[in-house]
Each structure stands twice: as C-alpha cells, then as structure tokens.
Length: 365
Image 1: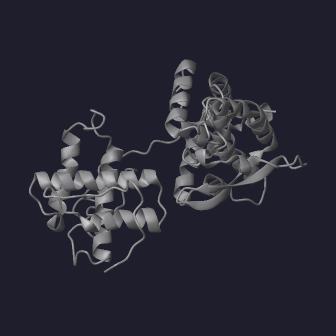
Image 2: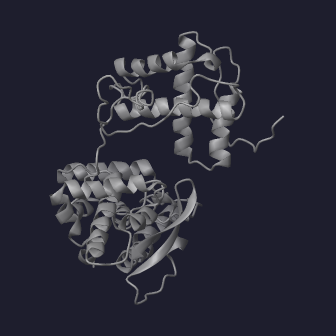
Image 3: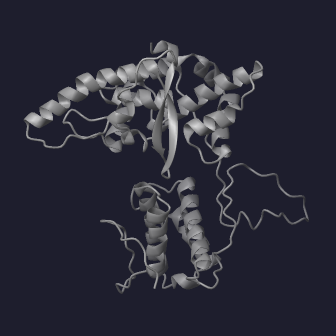
C-alpha cells in the first residue's frame, strides 16, 4: 500500500459510471498537484482532460485500460466535428492538440508507474510542432509520419506587442488598482497567476537608491523561486497606491465590519484581494474602449518584445550579453524555445520593433 499526503479540500476525484473510483487517475493528479507543486489551474485542466477522455470511453463502452490509437483518433475527430459543451463554439486546434497530448502523457505515466504493463498509447511521440514541415521526396518514407499521427496542423501565432501610444491609452482607461497591476505586467513581465501573489511585504521597506531598479523575489509558475526587476518609478507609484487607495479601502472595509486584513498587494475598493478574472475583465473592457485587443498576456508579451529588442540592439553594438537568456530568466520561461517566439515576433514585424524600442520606462517618470 502506497501512502500519500492527504488530498486537499475540493481535490477532483474521478469515478466510473458504476461509482468506482479510478484510482490511477486520482494518483496521477495527486502527484502533479501535491508532489510536483503544479498550480490549481493546471490541476483543473488535467482533471478536465481526463474527465472528458473517460466519459468518451464510457459512452462507447471502451475500457480505459485497453484504449488504443484508433480510440484516440476517434476522440480527436469527435472534437473536430462537434461544438464545445462549455463554450458552444467549435474547438480550437490548440485545444484539441492539448487534450490529445494530455491523454498521451497520462498513459505514459500509467506504464511508467506500472498501473499498466503496456499500452498502445504509451511511448507515442508528443511533438505537436506548429511549423509546416517540408514534404518527403516521392517514394521515400518520412520519419515524421508516425510522429504526426495524432497531430492537427497548427500554425504558431506570434505575440503582438502594444505600441507605446496604445500602452499609455490603455493605462489611462483602467481604474485603480487595475492600472497599477497592468503597469507591473508591462514593466516586469509578470504572469497573470504571479501578479496576485505579490504581497505588501515584497515591496515595502525598499529605500531609495542610486540604482534605477530593485530586484523583487517572487514565486514563479511551478511553483519555483524567481525574481523580476522593478524600476524605482514603478516602486514609487506602488508605494503611493499602498499609502492612499489601498489604505483607504481597507479602512472602509474595517468600518463595515470586515475583520480580514489581507497581505495581498492589490485589493479592490471593497478591501478584498483582486481576483484574476476581475483583472482580466477590466483589461479587456479598457481595451475595447480604446479600440485595441488588450489582454493580460499582451501586456506581458509587450514587456518581452520591448526588452528583447533593446538587448538585441546592445548585443549588435558589441555588448557581451545573451539577449534570449536574459529575457528567459526575467520571464520565468522553462524552455528557451518559448522565449524565441518573442525574437521572431520583433523580426517579422518592423513596426512592432520600432514601437517597442520607444522607451516606456522613461515615459513613466
């Protein structure tokens, strides 16, 4: 009997139609969430993939232990031909590939942990390349034919950074504290999930120095320890927000009987920590008012493109630096290939390159 740490409240459990617990699926989710420290959002995504897969197999009277490539292709094709039960719209190619990849990852795990001796779905390559590969010569066998067996062709969408004018207009359209949250993303590259983790203690007590920036330690995706570089002007603006808006909102909440005193840096007018969904909604609405497509990820992408363009210029001028590696660290990327997308974005769009070279840090002073 294998002993594991207790499952937290609201941990997802998967059952068969006859109410039998699917223990391997629960163990799989438990390992990734408890032992590997994946986020609650990632746990939910993994659970949704497994739930949809098991439900599809049960509807077709297929034992999950005996599922093979034919079943997985049928599952993929079902998503191609039907609308999403959640959104009511056709599935995106990236969503289909993500679910198929999740199923393959699960069966690899099952065989590796000896829940199954073998599986037709274990050991399958999961290279979901998005670039179009050159065709093999007639009469020859392509070594990538099997590799692409489950893959739908998917073209990569490169980031589209905001121009300086668009960024200023967006910030002006956002109310507090969402305008400051957007500035943190735009000037530091924080992820949406990392932004609510900032506490007052992370930015409090920073003394004015001759350095134009300060190193702020944060908890990255994973979770892993990391850091961002915050300009002194951004920290000054944050200190002003803490002493004015945040303090006033918390005092009002206490007068209304709220006993909580959140440590979160960003709170709303009711004195509660700002949720990710509320922040996303505010950014989207502000973008519509400004006539631009604005998302929280666009703000992060704008920082990456802006920084990378500047570093590339320094490298071309002779500086002994690795621009991609620097941006990789500051963005918290696990793979350099992820960072490379931003380099290709500024290479294919000269207008974007010119725009991001316009120094935002000097404009915020």
